[in-house]
Image 1 (cartoon, rainbow, N blue to C red):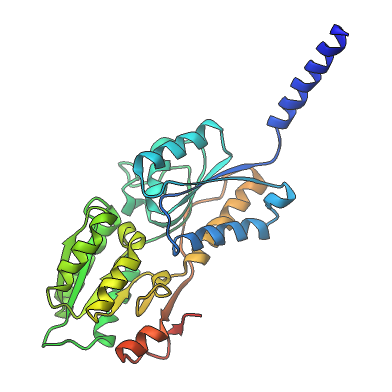
Image 2 (image 1 turned 30 degrees about the horizontal axis):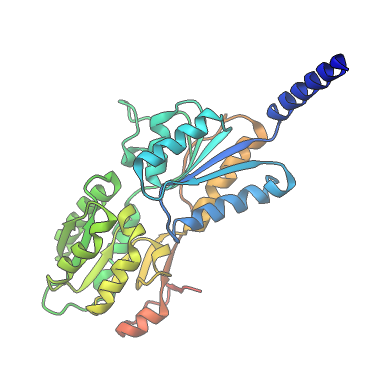
Length: 320
């Protein structure tokens, strides 16, 4: 009897090892914070995987999902937890998650989405080369030019010079660089830019109220994680003061901005997901590299346009 139990125990250990040595790939997906716009990238990423045959329901992939809820120490803990599993690859959304992943591993492939280029994230080496394990889709700041310069076309100034209000996170490289870009655009276009720094989501309401008290004509929602996370607060404050919101982020138009020219967040995630699927199929990163986001669009919110009595050019699509 004892011998039989010993054999049974050995068989269970062998079976367990085989289970752990499964061929099913494991993806560690990390969101830096909770946000309805950012979440569309995750939807696109998952749909791309499924379209390429990687479906949790069919047992062809296992996905571990965690959201740091805007807490940086928690974000670091999540990434380290994934690395300890270990996972086959990391999926990061948005830039804070990507930067944290790059800082913690040079080996496991990282597929980023809703992130700026490695240069803008300042994760390149001394020769400006991106990390060898960084893939997915990224965006530069060129589209901000188009978005920002839409303002004089759509918004009528109350006085001779249009005044644009912006809040930005001083500790976020993408936000700081976008501000520098907007300052140059404003100077060249005779636009007065009124900006205030913000350190956390908890400060947004107070800082936005201060900005709105400075007689601005329009609020510009720039690519900033705090702006994303606190956008409903911004919309509520701007609506009370009858100030429209322009943005470079197409996803924010659904949430109350007037119009935007920017990346389709769902397609951004889908693009990263197709890359990830290719890696899972070949089990190799050979031939893979991070790409620029491919799908951008001009969109507007019909209800907001009607509220402010603003005519939108025909090449803009209404949100559905």
